[in-house]
Amino acid sequence: MIAFDLKCSKGHTFEGWFEDGKAYEVQNKKGLVSCPICDDKTIIKAPSVFAIKGSQVKRKISDNQKALMELTWQVSEYVEKNFDNVGCNFAKEALKIHYGVSEPRNIRGTSTKQEEKTLKDEGIEFFKIPLQLNQDPEPDSD
Image 1 (tube, rainbow, N blue to C red):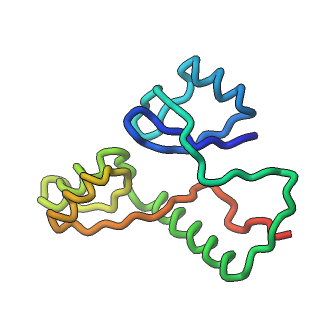
Image 2: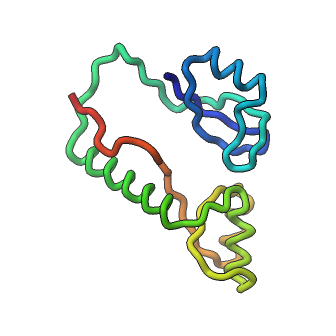
Image 3: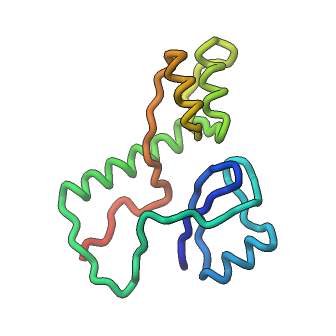
């Protein structure tokens, strides 16, 4: 299996897992790969921050790194379970809630830098966290 960082034509980034590079190409050409946020089917591979090779020697992870990874996993899991995913409509929903058009609730989603600036200008507090969903909270440290 291989994971690719993917990006739709609307700028949303997400991760996709495939048997190999050829499987990604075949599925993408058939329109089987789509953005989980907006369902756009125009998908490209995004530059990846890192790569993992199976033949490399595993490095030791410090107790502090393990604790931080566990905390990140717990926060991600909590947000996944307790926040309404509004996808690319995050800024719109936050504004509606702020001005009383929608009922107050916990929301999560994506926004552009311009939308984030608008939210700040309107006095709406928000924060960004890296979500690492569906990952093992206890990485192998052998």
